[in-house]
Amino acid sequence: MIRRPPRSTLSSSSAASDVYKRQYQRRVRGIYDSSMVQSMLVMLCMLLLSEARSTPPYLHAARLNYAQNLEQTITSVAARIVEATTGHSAELVSSWNATTDRDVGGFDLIPPSSEQAFGQLMDSFAQQHSSFAEHLLSHAILGDSPLDVGYARSVVHNCNGYAEQLHSAGREVVSGLLGGFVESGGGFGFGLQVYCGCRLLLNTGSGMGGGMTSAQAGLVEGGLGGGGGLALFSEDNTAVPSLAIGGGGGGDLTGCAGSTDFAQKTPVDSISAARVSLMAEQVRNCPKGELSVVGGGGGGMGFVFVADSNQSAVSAYGGGLDLKFMNTDAVANDAKCSGLLLQNNQTRSSSFGSIHQASSKCRDQCQDHALQGLGAYWKCTCPCNKEAFTQLNLTFASKMTCA
Image 1: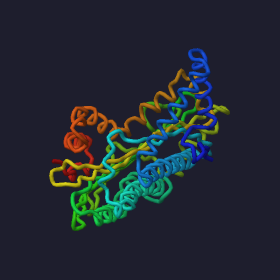
Image 2: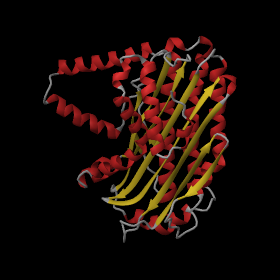
Image 3: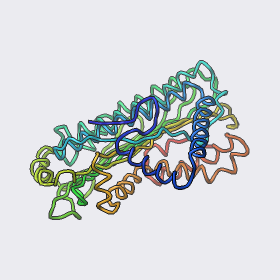
Image 4: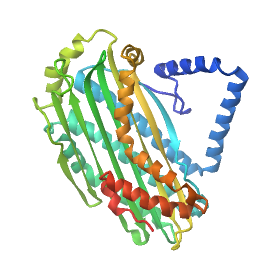
């Protein structure tokens, strides 16, 4: 079962997040009076309303749809991974935020006839990322693929579908434009751990990234890549996994190749067999209330529309999701373990935010160019991002077009 905040609020209202709220409120009452707290909340609401008014409704809706869909997919997939690998049905509580990129603007450059297509372009990343997570679950965890190739097979088998989503959205978005070209990209990832007390039982994660450039005449080029891995640990050895699998794949928009991780360990031939032989007894013997599930992740997507040959007229928009989730016992168990559970989760999950971290670094480096306009800003951030993504071995980096 998954409990999450109301869909209409984008705020946390779950049992675990209520713990955080109460802790925060206790700290606030020790520093500020109630009128100051109310003023701070009013200012926050005004900022949120300002963003909603300045952003075209079709983009605002697409960004929120992306965050909502990805939150639901990740928490649902996480709960099913836990049940499939341990036999434990976890009640997960999610806390999440829909984020907006800082370097956005130039919306008046988008022709009215193309507005719906730009919204659909962002929706295509929501569909792609959700599909990727579901496919990995089906192939690598629940399916009949051999354990050592499940992750790689999932990417290769579904690569054409991911590519077609980008092809279709790219062709549609440029069909109503009079010139220029569109760069668009996105990525997501998540990780989760299962503990008995302070002892790690399971560690897993997955993610993907992709992007494309589309121009007149319907030409769409790009690339994508992704993968995942899973490790199960025994009571006798918590440093070296008893089972370790992983892999992935990537390529351009014409096809993908897969690869498997080195040093895989597969003492059984299926996840269901691993649950019985490696996990069942550990979960059964774990004292009541001491089994914890903690996880987190996120994602993002966006576009840049360069409207003229001088690359000075630029429209840009993007956003994403920041997510944390856990079961109802995790907070209490984390306190007993001196913060080990949630601290380790934050460290492990942060590895899936490498795309966002690289992009943020480039934006910070190019802040001086922003004073000259969004076009100059993009001319600085695009090659910086391309180099950073190349260093991260993201397959779509070579397809990025920069001035």
